[in-house]
Length: 105
Image (cartoon, rainbow, N blue to C red):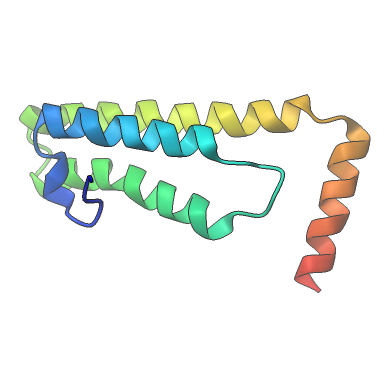
């Protein structure tokens, strides 16, 4: 199993490749039809660890791959989420919005 709590787990390209595969798998398994706020938050936290690793190394160009990986996986997440919403009809979006509103109240 890959550890997500240790920012330095991202410190080598090989370890990062393992983490990126795990992130991609988790993003692919998201079901945007249901409210998964906590799970999405956990995935986004893991994604931001990439950016943090670059910062922790004082923006050393040796760790620039961390920032590039962050931008890539963030774009992948955004595309998956946007594709989900784009595939919904106007009626589906209204129904989902109403369901979310009732959960808030």
